[in-house]
Length: 441
Image (cartoon, rainbow, N blue to C red):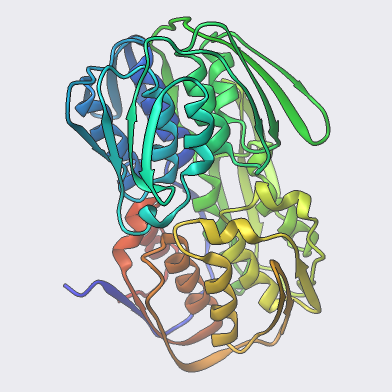
């Protein structure tokens, strides 16, 4: 079977209620924290993507047992000292930067050297942003050219550190936080605001943590070496996955979609804020708090008369995984949209800023770039009729899904390679798209 899809017609109007898969960031944190708990944890709606399956395989290699039941995963944690870090263990993080960076934090007390590797895409990403602060705890970490594979040898004499996170990276912050729970004393973190799933988990699990915030930074103190009990958790829907369906609906004709039970953590809500500034009128309904995380149903309707945006850079970190589909909306909006300080996009699974610009030009949209700032000249009448092939995007799942949304809303005949890339984060993508009436071959 060819690893590609063909799309030759736009999607017809639809009016549906759906659920999306479990949140990837939270799913990985569930697996890793359950592996450190004492006793059994039950995780419902765990995302069964390649990234999360890699996390389960990694904890299995470290001596943690798990099993899949009818509607939940059960993980039997052995506490903060429970990993069986025997000699010559090799962990494969696949394509998951979240897994690779976070699990390094949990290996700071490993008894023997452990090697962490990843696929070709992940192996080209910078890991010094986590290995350098982790070295300050007293561990030995080696890597070539600051990239994977990384070898880590833990220490029995860990020391707490003071760490300043300047990139707005939740992965870097979380890696240090996970190392802190293994370390005696109080680790102090000053972090540029980013996703706070790990902080919410710590509070829910009664891990000693204190957070003081101002407009720009969070000041986090963590007292280490406190064991915590196994837990039960139902993973909410992933807003990054939902974003493709929001834009599909927004750019389609006479359509309406209600996505149930989605995580709307304020550090992830940039996609909704940005689209609403572009005249989208996306509505959050039935809001509630579940173990610290905000959850809501999301209602979106087709929308004409979308308008350009001068996107505040302050929203970048809250929409970092959604900018490709945001660019697609800007392509259909009236006026010139401006986006600034998007260099972090090039540090994802692929150089997304480069690919995003190239994609927009492919479909006839003018883009002007200056450094990491871009201007997108929207065309509300944009309609395609030519032949388009999308390939050589390093199997980036978000590039693939953005291409599908473009094909289903703009027209044209599309051949999009590497369809299995969706398994990284959204394995139910095709199932849901087909439920909405898309014709994908």
